[in-house]
Length: 397
Ligand SMILES: *Cc1c(COP(=O)(O)O)cnc(C)c1O
Image (tube, rainbow, N blue to C red):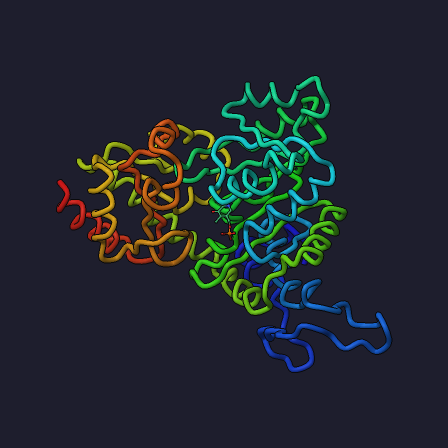
Protein backbone atom coordinates (compact mmCIF):
# COMPACT_ATOMS: atom_id res chain seq x y z
CA UNK A 1 0.00 0.00 0.00
CA UNK A 2 1.50 3.31 -0.98
CA UNK A 3 1.71 6.27 1.35
CA UNK A 4 -1.36 8.44 1.71
CA UNK A 5 -3.80 6.19 -0.21
CA UNK A 6 -5.83 5.17 2.81
CA UNK A 7 -6.89 6.71 6.08
CA UNK A 8 -4.76 6.74 9.18
CA UNK A 9 -6.60 4.00 11.12
CA UNK A 10 -6.73 1.67 8.11
CA UNK A 11 -3.00 2.15 7.51
CA UNK A 12 -2.23 1.52 11.17
CA UNK A 13 -4.08 -1.82 11.10
CA UNK A 14 -3.06 -3.06 7.64
CA UNK A 15 0.25 -1.58 6.46
CA UNK A 16 3.09 -3.99 7.20
CA UNK A 17 0.57 -6.45 8.68
CA UNK A 18 0.13 -8.96 5.87
CA UNK A 19 -0.74 -12.57 6.76
CA UNK A 20 2.12 -15.08 6.60
CA UNK A 21 1.74 -16.74 3.18
CA UNK A 22 2.99 -20.28 3.84
CA UNK A 23 0.55 -21.00 6.73
CA UNK A 24 -2.10 -18.28 6.46
CA UNK A 25 -1.36 -17.05 10.01
CA UNK A 26 -3.08 -13.65 10.13
CA UNK A 27 -0.30 -12.25 12.28
CA UNK A 28 3.27 -12.61 11.06
CA UNK A 29 5.48 -14.73 13.34
CA UNK A 30 8.42 -13.38 15.29
CA UNK A 31 11.46 -14.23 13.21
CA UNK A 32 13.80 -15.04 16.07
CA UNK A 33 16.76 -15.83 13.89
CA UNK A 34 20.25 -14.41 13.67
CA UNK A 35 21.09 -15.76 10.24
CA UNK A 36 19.44 -17.01 7.03
CA UNK A 37 20.11 -20.03 4.82
CA UNK A 38 21.86 -19.29 1.54
CA UNK A 39 21.48 -21.63 -1.45
CA UNK A 40 24.75 -20.53 -2.87
CA UNK A 41 27.07 -17.81 -1.52
CA UNK A 42 25.09 -14.53 -1.46
CA UNK A 43 22.04 -16.22 -3.01
CA UNK A 44 19.31 -15.69 -0.38
CA UNK A 45 15.75 -14.39 0.00
CA UNK A 46 16.70 -10.79 0.87
CA UNK A 47 18.09 -11.28 4.38
CA UNK A 48 21.51 -12.58 5.37
CA UNK A 49 22.10 -11.57 9.02
CA UNK A 50 19.70 -9.95 11.51
CA UNK A 51 22.00 -7.01 12.36
CA UNK A 52 21.47 -6.01 8.72
CA UNK A 53 17.79 -6.92 8.38
CA UNK A 54 14.91 -9.10 9.53
CA UNK A 55 11.30 -9.55 8.29
CA UNK A 56 9.98 -8.06 11.57
CA UNK A 57 12.04 -4.91 10.94
CA UNK A 58 10.63 -4.67 7.40
CA UNK A 59 7.00 -5.08 8.53
CA UNK A 60 7.32 -2.36 11.16
CA UNK A 61 9.08 -0.06 8.69
CA UNK A 62 6.20 -0.38 6.18
CA UNK A 63 3.65 0.41 8.87
CA UNK A 64 5.59 3.45 10.12
CA UNK A 65 5.99 4.82 6.58
CA UNK A 66 2.24 4.57 5.97
CA UNK A 67 1.21 6.35 9.16
CA UNK A 68 3.91 9.05 9.14
CA UNK A 69 3.49 9.70 5.41
CA UNK A 70 7.10 9.03 4.43
CA UNK A 71 8.71 6.87 1.73
CA UNK A 72 11.37 5.12 3.81
CA UNK A 73 12.02 4.00 7.36
CA UNK A 74 14.85 2.35 9.28
CA UNK A 75 14.00 0.96 12.70
CA UNK A 76 16.69 1.07 15.36
CA UNK A 77 17.29 -0.06 18.91
CA UNK A 78 16.25 3.21 20.63
CA UNK A 79 15.46 6.84 19.95
CA UNK A 80 19.04 7.79 20.78
CA UNK A 81 20.43 5.21 18.34
CA UNK A 82 18.61 7.15 15.60
CA UNK A 83 20.39 10.36 16.62
CA UNK A 84 23.65 8.38 16.79
CA UNK A 85 23.21 7.07 13.24
CA UNK A 86 22.33 10.48 11.78
CA UNK A 87 25.11 12.38 13.55
CA UNK A 88 27.60 9.66 12.57
CA UNK A 89 26.55 10.11 8.97
CA UNK A 90 26.89 13.89 9.26
CA UNK A 91 30.25 13.51 10.98
CA UNK A 92 31.66 12.45 7.65
CA UNK A 93 30.95 16.02 6.64
CA UNK A 94 32.05 17.56 9.99
CA UNK A 95 30.73 20.84 11.26
CA UNK A 96 28.28 22.78 13.28
CA UNK A 97 25.15 21.22 14.70
CA UNK A 98 22.41 23.66 15.60
CA UNK A 99 19.45 22.98 17.86
CA UNK A 100 16.41 25.18 18.24
CA UNK A 101 14.89 25.71 21.67
CA UNK A 102 14.91 22.81 24.12
CA UNK A 103 16.20 19.38 23.11
CA UNK A 104 15.35 16.11 24.83
CA UNK A 105 17.95 15.77 27.64
CA UNK A 106 19.40 12.49 26.34
CA UNK A 107 19.85 13.97 22.86
CA UNK A 108 21.59 16.99 24.32
CA UNK A 109 23.90 14.79 26.42
CA UNK A 110 24.72 12.57 23.42
CA UNK A 111 25.73 15.59 21.34
CA UNK A 112 27.52 17.44 24.13
CA UNK A 113 29.43 14.53 25.66
CA UNK A 114 30.05 12.22 22.69
CA UNK A 115 29.85 13.96 19.32
CA UNK A 116 30.68 17.59 20.08
CA UNK A 117 33.35 17.36 22.78
CA UNK A 118 36.33 19.67 22.57
CA UNK A 119 38.74 16.70 22.49
CA UNK A 120 36.94 15.14 19.53
CA UNK A 121 37.16 18.55 17.89
CA UNK A 122 34.86 17.45 15.14
CA UNK A 123 31.45 19.00 15.63
CA UNK A 124 30.34 22.12 17.47
CA UNK A 125 26.94 22.29 19.13
CA UNK A 126 25.11 25.63 19.07
CA UNK A 127 21.64 26.60 20.16
CA UNK A 128 19.30 29.10 18.55
CA UNK A 129 16.76 30.41 21.06
CA UNK A 130 14.79 32.41 18.56
CA UNK A 131 14.43 32.93 14.83
CA UNK A 132 16.77 35.94 14.63
CA UNK A 133 19.59 33.92 16.24
CA UNK A 134 18.80 31.10 13.81
CA UNK A 135 19.00 33.47 10.81
CA UNK A 136 22.29 34.81 12.09
CA UNK A 137 23.78 31.28 12.45
CA UNK A 138 22.51 30.20 9.03
CA UNK A 139 23.84 33.27 7.24
CA UNK A 140 27.34 32.95 8.69
CA UNK A 141 29.86 34.18 6.07
CA UNK A 142 32.43 31.53 6.90
CA UNK A 143 31.23 28.33 5.17
CA UNK A 144 32.80 26.01 7.75
CA UNK A 145 30.88 27.76 10.53
CA UNK A 146 27.47 27.32 8.95
CA UNK A 147 25.18 24.57 10.30
CA UNK A 148 25.58 21.12 8.75
CA UNK A 149 22.81 19.56 10.80
CA UNK A 150 19.81 21.22 12.35
CA UNK A 151 17.85 19.45 15.11
CA UNK A 152 14.52 20.44 16.61
CA UNK A 153 11.41 19.18 18.37
CA UNK A 154 7.82 20.35 18.78
CA UNK A 155 6.21 20.24 21.30
CA UNK A 156 9.34 20.46 23.46
CA UNK A 157 10.07 18.69 26.72
CA UNK A 158 8.99 19.53 29.39
CA UNK A 159 7.52 23.00 28.70
CA UNK A 160 5.55 21.85 25.63
CA UNK A 161 6.47 24.88 23.55
CA UNK A 162 5.44 24.54 19.91
CA UNK A 163 7.70 25.66 17.10
CA UNK A 164 6.35 26.39 13.61
CA UNK A 165 8.00 23.66 11.53
CA UNK A 166 7.33 25.45 8.23
CA UNK A 167 8.65 28.78 9.47
CA UNK A 168 11.89 27.28 10.77
CA UNK A 169 12.47 25.28 7.60
CA UNK A 170 11.77 28.32 5.45
CA UNK A 171 14.43 30.28 7.30
CA UNK A 172 17.00 27.53 6.80
CA UNK A 173 16.22 26.79 3.16
CA UNK A 174 16.39 30.50 2.25
CA UNK A 175 19.68 31.05 4.06
CA UNK A 176 23.31 30.45 3.13
CA UNK A 177 22.99 27.14 5.02
CA UNK A 178 20.20 25.91 2.73
CA UNK A 179 21.92 22.54 2.15
CA UNK A 180 22.10 21.65 5.81
CA UNK A 181 20.40 18.43 6.89
CA UNK A 182 17.25 18.87 8.95
CA UNK A 183 16.30 16.43 11.69
CA UNK A 184 12.90 16.70 13.37
CA UNK A 185 12.04 14.67 16.47
CA UNK A 186 8.30 13.92 16.33
CA UNK A 187 8.18 11.76 19.48
CA UNK A 188 5.89 14.00 21.56
CA UNK A 189 3.32 14.71 18.85
CA UNK A 190 3.37 11.25 17.19
CA UNK A 191 2.19 10.67 13.60
CA UNK A 192 -1.40 10.87 14.89
CA UNK A 193 -1.06 14.60 15.62
CA UNK A 194 1.71 15.48 13.14
CA UNK A 195 2.02 13.61 9.85
CA UNK A 196 2.70 14.41 6.19
CA UNK A 197 5.20 16.95 7.48
CA UNK A 198 7.15 19.50 5.46
CA UNK A 199 8.97 17.66 2.64
CA UNK A 200 12.16 19.61 3.34
CA UNK A 201 12.71 17.66 6.54
CA UNK A 202 15.48 15.17 5.79
CA UNK A 203 14.97 12.91 8.80
CA UNK A 204 11.99 12.46 11.12
CA UNK A 205 12.76 10.41 14.20
CA UNK A 206 10.68 8.87 16.97
CA UNK A 207 11.60 7.29 20.22
CA UNK A 208 9.28 4.29 19.69
CA UNK A 209 9.72 3.64 23.41
CA UNK A 210 7.01 6.25 24.00
CA UNK A 211 3.67 6.49 22.13
CA UNK A 212 4.55 4.09 19.30
CA UNK A 213 4.90 1.35 21.91
CA UNK A 214 2.37 2.86 24.28
CA UNK A 215 2.68 -0.01 26.76
CA UNK A 216 5.97 0.72 28.58
CA UNK A 217 7.34 -2.65 27.47
CA UNK A 218 9.93 -1.91 24.78
CA UNK A 219 12.73 0.48 23.91
CA UNK A 220 13.02 1.38 20.23
CA UNK A 221 13.44 4.10 17.64
CA UNK A 222 12.91 4.83 13.96
CA UNK A 223 14.25 7.19 11.31
CA UNK A 224 11.89 8.19 8.49
CA UNK A 225 12.93 9.93 5.28
CA UNK A 226 11.74 10.58 1.73
CA UNK A 227 15.26 10.27 0.33
CA UNK A 228 16.36 6.83 -0.93
CA UNK A 229 20.05 7.66 -0.44
CA UNK A 230 19.47 8.58 3.24
CA UNK A 231 17.52 5.33 3.73
CA UNK A 232 20.51 3.40 2.34
CA UNK A 233 22.83 5.29 4.67
CA UNK A 234 20.62 4.66 7.73
CA UNK A 235 20.50 0.93 6.94
CA UNK A 236 24.28 0.99 6.56
CA UNK A 237 24.87 2.81 9.86
CA UNK A 238 22.46 0.48 11.67
CA UNK A 239 24.30 -2.56 10.35
CA UNK A 240 27.83 -1.17 10.72
CA UNK A 241 27.35 0.28 14.21
CA UNK A 242 25.11 -2.48 15.59
CA UNK A 243 22.10 -0.21 16.16
CA UNK A 244 19.56 -2.91 15.23
CA UNK A 245 16.49 -3.62 17.37
CA UNK A 246 15.39 -7.16 18.30
CA UNK A 247 12.83 -8.98 16.13
CA UNK A 248 10.62 -9.44 19.21
CA UNK A 249 10.58 -5.71 20.01
CA UNK A 250 9.66 -4.94 16.38
CA UNK A 251 6.85 -7.50 16.53
CA UNK A 252 5.52 -5.86 19.71
CA UNK A 253 5.71 -2.40 18.13
CA UNK A 254 3.97 -3.70 14.98
CA UNK A 255 1.12 -4.84 17.25
CA UNK A 256 1.09 -1.64 19.34
CA UNK A 257 0.84 0.63 16.33
CA UNK A 258 -2.49 -0.86 15.29
CA UNK A 259 -4.11 0.92 18.23
CA UNK A 260 -2.03 4.13 18.15
CA UNK A 261 -4.93 6.26 16.85
CA UNK A 262 -7.37 4.85 19.41
CA UNK A 263 -4.95 5.29 22.26
CA UNK A 264 -4.11 8.85 21.30
CA UNK A 265 -7.68 9.85 20.70
CA UNK A 266 -8.42 8.86 24.30
CA UNK A 267 -5.13 10.10 25.74
CA UNK A 268 -5.40 13.56 24.20
CA UNK A 269 -9.08 13.80 25.21
CA UNK A 270 -8.14 12.97 28.82
CA UNK A 271 -5.18 15.38 28.71
CA UNK A 272 -7.35 18.29 27.55
CA UNK A 273 -9.85 17.64 30.38
CA UNK A 274 -7.06 17.45 32.96
CA UNK A 275 -5.39 20.62 31.66
CA UNK A 276 -8.69 22.50 32.05
CA UNK A 277 -9.28 21.06 35.51
CA UNK A 278 -5.81 22.01 36.74
CA UNK A 279 -5.90 25.48 35.21
CA UNK A 280 -8.79 26.32 37.56
CA UNK A 281 -7.11 24.85 40.66
CA UNK A 282 -5.90 27.09 43.52
CA UNK A 283 -2.65 25.17 44.03
CA UNK A 284 -1.63 25.73 40.41
CA UNK A 285 0.23 28.76 39.14
CA UNK A 286 0.51 27.71 35.48
CA UNK A 287 -0.61 24.90 33.15
CA UNK A 288 1.30 24.20 29.96
CA UNK A 289 -0.79 22.32 27.42
CA UNK A 290 -0.63 23.29 23.73
CA UNK A 291 -4.42 23.09 23.43
CA UNK A 292 -5.12 25.70 26.10
CA UNK A 293 -5.91 29.21 24.87
CA UNK A 294 -3.60 30.51 27.61
CA UNK A 295 -0.61 28.53 26.25
CA UNK A 296 2.10 30.78 24.82
CA UNK A 297 2.26 28.87 21.51
CA UNK A 298 -1.40 27.82 21.23
CA UNK A 299 -1.67 29.51 17.81
CA UNK A 300 1.27 27.51 16.40
CA UNK A 301 -0.11 24.28 17.88
CA UNK A 302 -3.59 24.95 16.45
CA UNK A 303 -2.20 25.48 12.96
CA UNK A 304 0.20 22.54 13.04
CA UNK A 305 -1.29 19.74 15.15
CA UNK A 306 -4.25 17.63 14.02
CA UNK A 307 -6.76 15.55 16.01
CA UNK A 308 -5.94 17.29 19.27
CA UNK A 309 -2.85 18.40 21.13
CA UNK A 310 -1.19 15.31 22.54
CA UNK A 311 -1.21 13.84 26.00
CA UNK A 312 1.57 15.63 27.88
CA UNK A 313 0.55 18.24 30.44
CA UNK A 314 3.12 20.22 32.45
CA UNK A 315 2.04 22.14 35.50
CA UNK A 316 3.73 24.60 37.88
CA UNK A 317 2.35 24.07 41.39
CA UNK A 318 2.74 26.59 44.20
CA UNK A 319 5.00 24.15 46.03
CA UNK A 320 8.68 24.08 46.93
CA UNK A 321 11.08 21.29 45.92
CA UNK A 322 10.39 19.04 48.93
CA UNK A 323 6.61 19.46 48.85
CA UNK A 324 6.60 18.76 45.08
CA UNK A 325 8.55 15.55 45.66
CA UNK A 326 6.14 14.54 48.42
CA UNK A 327 3.12 15.29 46.31
CA UNK A 328 4.17 13.23 43.30
CA UNK A 329 4.89 10.29 45.60
CA UNK A 330 1.32 10.39 46.98
CA UNK A 331 -0.83 9.72 43.90
CA UNK A 332 -2.89 6.52 43.79
CA UNK A 333 -3.63 6.25 40.05
CA UNK A 334 -0.75 8.26 38.55
CA UNK A 335 2.51 6.31 38.75
CA UNK A 336 5.80 7.99 39.58
CA UNK A 337 8.24 7.05 36.82
CA UNK A 338 10.38 8.47 34.04
CA UNK A 339 9.34 8.05 30.41
CA UNK A 340 5.97 8.86 28.87
CA UNK A 341 3.42 7.97 26.25
CA UNK A 342 1.98 4.74 27.61
CA UNK A 343 -1.57 3.67 28.48
CA UNK A 344 -0.93 4.21 32.21
CA UNK A 345 -0.66 7.79 33.46
CA UNK A 346 2.76 8.78 34.74
CA UNK A 347 4.08 11.70 36.71
CA UNK A 348 7.61 13.10 36.67
CA UNK A 349 9.34 15.91 38.56
CA UNK A 350 11.96 17.45 36.25
CA UNK A 351 13.83 19.33 39.05
CA UNK A 352 14.59 16.13 41.00
CA UNK A 353 14.41 13.50 38.23
CA UNK A 354 14.92 14.06 34.48
CA UNK A 355 16.61 17.50 34.80
CA UNK A 356 18.28 17.15 38.23
CA UNK A 357 21.79 17.38 36.75
CA UNK A 358 21.17 21.01 35.69
CA UNK A 359 22.09 23.54 38.47
CA UNK A 360 19.10 25.24 40.12
CA UNK A 361 19.91 28.72 38.78
CA UNK A 362 20.09 27.45 35.23
CA UNK A 363 16.87 25.46 35.75
CA UNK A 364 15.08 28.61 36.90
CA UNK A 365 16.34 30.48 33.82
CA UNK A 366 15.01 27.67 31.63
CA UNK A 367 11.59 27.84 33.27
CA UNK A 368 12.06 24.52 35.11
CA UNK A 369 10.63 25.66 38.46
CA UNK A 370 10.90 23.49 41.57
CA UNK A 371 7.12 23.12 41.49
CA UNK A 372 7.02 21.97 37.84
CA UNK A 373 5.41 18.56 37.41
CA UNK A 374 5.10 16.74 34.08
CA UNK A 375 2.10 14.46 33.55
CA UNK A 376 1.94 11.84 30.83
CA UNK A 377 -1.76 11.10 30.49
CA UNK A 378 -2.94 7.56 29.82
CA UNK A 379 -6.21 5.93 28.83
CA UNK A 380 -7.75 5.46 32.28
CA UNK A 381 -11.19 6.94 33.05
CA UNK A 382 -10.59 10.67 33.22
CA UNK A 383 -12.92 10.89 36.25
CA UNK A 384 -10.54 8.59 38.17
CA UNK A 385 -7.52 10.64 37.15
CA UNK A 386 -9.18 13.88 38.20
CA UNK A 387 -10.36 12.32 41.50
CA UNK A 388 -6.76 11.24 42.19
CA UNK A 389 -5.54 14.80 41.51
CA UNK A 390 -8.32 16.29 43.63
CA UNK A 391 -7.63 14.06 46.65
CA UNK A 392 -3.85 14.42 46.45
CA UNK A 393 -3.76 18.18 45.87
CA UNK A 394 -6.11 18.74 48.80
CA UNK A 395 -3.44 17.39 51.17
CA UNK A 396 -1.03 20.13 50.03
CA UNK A 397 -3.33 23.14 50.17
C1 LIG B 1 12.75 9.45 24.96
C2 LIG B 1 13.09 10.42 23.92
C3 LIG B 1 14.23 10.26 23.11
C4 LIG B 1 15.20 9.11 23.33
O1 LIG B 1 14.63 7.89 23.04
P1 LIG B 1 15.09 6.49 23.72
O2 LIG B 1 14.18 5.52 23.08
O3 LIG B 1 14.92 6.65 25.20
O4 LIG B 1 16.53 6.31 23.34
C5 LIG B 1 14.47 11.18 22.12
N1 LIG B 1 13.65 12.24 21.93
C6 LIG B 1 12.54 12.43 22.68
C7 LIG B 1 11.67 13.61 22.41
C8 LIG B 1 12.23 11.53 23.70
O5 LIG B 1 11.14 11.74 24.45
